[in-house]
Amino acid sequence: MSASAEPLSGSHCTVCGEPVESDAKRCPECGLSLPAARGSQVLGRSGLWLLGGVMLAVYAVVLLIVAAAR
Image (cartoon, rainbow, N blue to C red; front, side):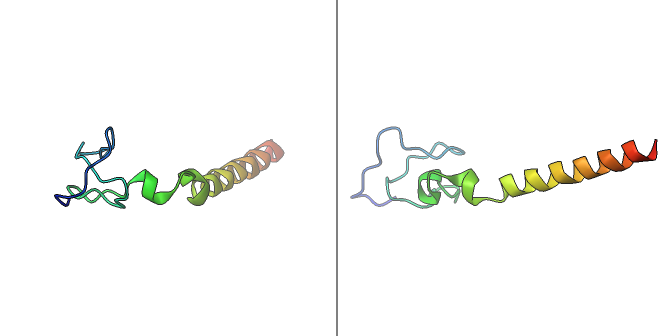
């Protein structure tokens, strides 16, 4: 962190607790990408929802196959 930049009060890295600048994209101590730099819709842009949907679809197909085999 530069000497002239003051960290926001309460603006800390979620992993190491190091104070970070308000416009920092990564923690200067551990290198973690900070949520504010990624945007407020982290789950919306990740493949988490897509992965969950695919897993649910595969489960439903397997359930139908097992039910049809009885």
